[in-house]
Length: 317
Ligand code: A3P
Image 1 (tube, rainbow, N blue to C red):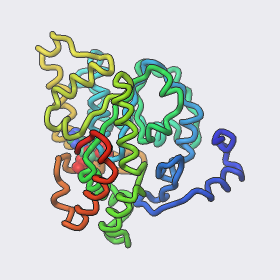
Image 2: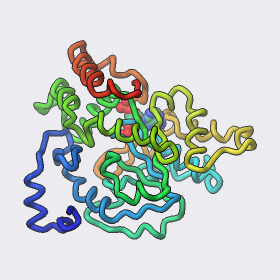
Image 3: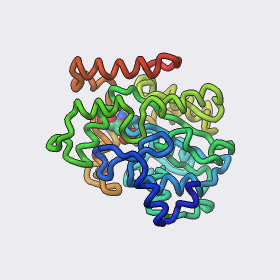
């Protein structure tokens, strides 16, 4: 099992070397592990997460494919959960990017083979992950903790990922063309891909187990943030009271977490998180920016993939 291989043993190295690898804008490349393409840099962390994380019933876990709007939804969830202790004027969001407040298991919590003591964190503990449903630790599935899944249409996700990639490496000057990138995306060879199995894994679970997984679309957040925030608050067990609704608390949080407000904060303009500038997480934040990037042939390639992979599901983009 992977736990036997956890140390940086020779065995682990040999096993690692045997896994299929693919090109990615991620400097370390991606590696096929449990049927998803994991950034090689995060593989050890994912394994530690799988082996060591013990979910509590009150945990709230935000799951998403990269570039679905995770930074945004983290800010919203954090603000909903902590709204009685913090105000719009003293919220940590003014000085920290939301990734510091709702950490990724694979990129922060289990970073560098560390096994942190998470039992002292105050409840509810908020975490995030890009790991597909099938590969989540058993204790997440068996406990009563909640999973909020954020989904974004594949066209905008792909375009957003391409732009984000330019912060990780110089996509434009490398031999990595946009067309090649679209092709890898359609083959599923991209960070935490394939896109379809990631989305459908959580989609299926949200239908079979609606108390466990809440499926939210980026496009719905953009269209009706107030309704979606109420839905989210109900699901995670922090419903807005009639009094709060009257006072405009939902509107206040939605404004605080809006692109316009967050993007202009000093921390998000000049700050850094890990090896990336915070501003790389804020670009346009629009629905449909893909029309500016996809030519008819790349669009056709994407549409073909979507039709083929999503035809048997009730999910529509
Ligand atoms: P674009 O590149 O299309 O602009 P993630 O947070 O999962 O990495 O996703 C990043 C995407 O979410 C980027 O999309 C980014 O601009 C967008 N985004 C970040 N903050 C946002 C906000 N407050 N409101 C709407 N979109 C936001």
